[in-house]
Length: 180
Image (cartoon, rainbow, N blue to C red; front, top):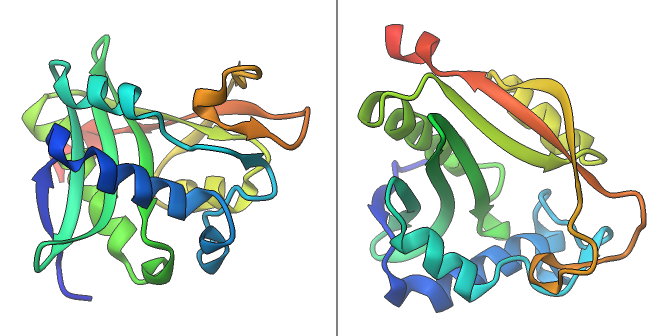
């Protein structure tokens, strides 16, 4: 795989980001990849207003992976009270499994660890997504046992198709990465 170019999103990227994130997680197109949540959730995956806030707030970046100006993947990273946060990780469904996500995750960890001097990266994953949790575990994340409720009733985060959804917090020690 050719290494992608990384850049920070601007508000002008919001429509393309909404389309990318939705295609990676919702609807029939998402079933081309392995990250689909189509059997768990319907509706939108990202709210444009929430995305704008993430782009504009301090110590927060929506990182884009592109090749020849074409948007391939994205992730949101932020400093949340001295701990890195990683979310909105989306790779175009037809490109999943080719190493693009691994490169984007590594770049996100580099920014949090080396540029922002954060010692840990944290994320939340729907706890029934065992295959996705295993993906992160192979990349050094550990299950913390901490769970958070799913925001039922808030359509900005999707329309649940099940009543047993919740988030589990995963975490990685970035200080080991910085020492390497």
